[in-house]
Image (cartoon, rainbow, N blue to C red):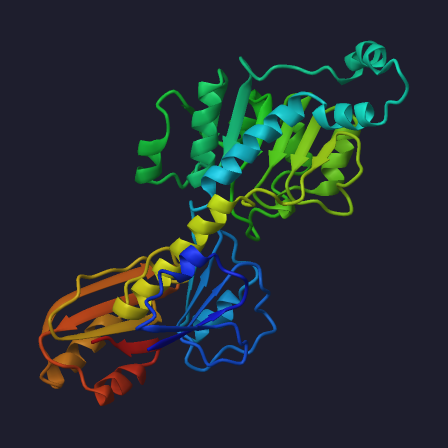
Length: 387
């Protein structure tokens, strides 16, 4: 039996992925859980359960999880990339329309009208909220992951010219990207050519304030900027200055802050990107499935701190080893198998930056004391025998 701790309310369809015969689910933070499923709960000050093996975030962002601490303890952290992509895509498209026409301002103005001649007031005042159409305009998409690709393809169907940039575009993503999308050689190309720019990149130390005074100066005058990725990607002081001098005509952001609310030219949406019933269901199911696969087989998919690594189950013994990505680890593992008289019938090793995963199938049962010997190797973070 595996004990699963939920730190937020998780959609029922997600918890249904956990077979009651194999899993016990609790919301007691004091529980010594094997796995955790959460959404936005802040784990940084939380004492991690002693036997914790994995954390699954029902969503893309993992800033609320102490990833470095988890890695040191050999705890795999999962997220659910793409599960909420359609929901975010739809809001980004709505954001483009909000950037094009002052719909929000118009609604607020109309809501304040009084008297018997409202219709006449509307006809007289509506010109103050006129805007432009998106058809024929150029949309720049920076980041062609699950969401960026969907936005780019839809914008193309809406009659826009679309230019995209992603230096890490995967082969799978490239297949899903419309052949009509222009591929830029650099972000600067996107800045120079686009009437609208939408950013879809993860927040890291390297991407913090990637939109700033210097990059804004490279954009067209009157550019419309959309940020449904992370608020910290944009320097708020610089965007406000760009709006004031006319460089940016509209900024639509899904991450309101003290600097961006109640500001002329800024539409601050209250983080609604993934706030749909369908998105929450998709994220919950994917998170639970990732957790089940890892706990029961050792296979890893969509981890943020360890590599994707999977191997078909063998008939007898199986061992999963999380370790540092350093020389001679594999030879030490295989030598120890040979010395113990345990034949290796299948093996896979994958790495991700400083960390790696090795899964080994043997045609012998693997004794617990053997796992302890593997765990004593310098650089090994976690060893599990999986029957």
